Amino acid sequence: MANQDNKKTILVVDDEPEIRKLVSAMVSQLGYPVITADSGEHALTLYSHQHGNIEMLITDVVAPGMSGPMLADKLAELQPGLKVLYISGYDNTHVVQSYVVEKGHALLAKPFTAEELQAKVREVLRAPAETRVGA
Image (cartoon, rainbow, N blue to C red; front, side):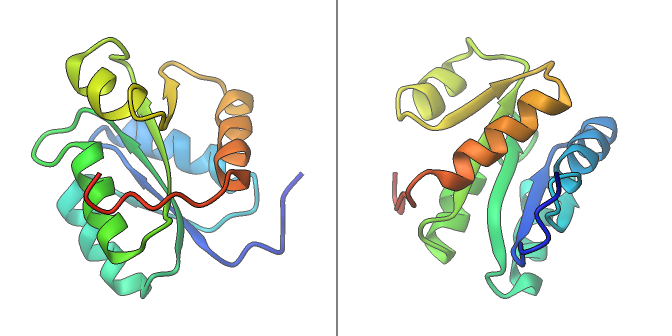
């Protein structure tokens, strides 16, 4: 069931076009506007054009150039309390363990179903805002 009252956007960042498209389609079914980026740098540019109107970041943990945690930290400096959901096909890597799991951040392991992603998005959006500046 789509939530038509949502006004804020979800930013999906993944370097794989197929993953971006699938995640975007799955999240759109919840009624949220979605914008996508293929890199952390691209995401920062899109964020600047959204004037802080991003409710949540969904990003791959491991990415070329800027990692998901690095991107989340940069965006958290601009918008404290930004909701973040990490997705990863490598849930046992050092980056995932030290920057996501140990800090208690939301993580969804690939592959996942639309229902699993949508449930996790709802869970993260309902959670209290977290200030992670400099985390």
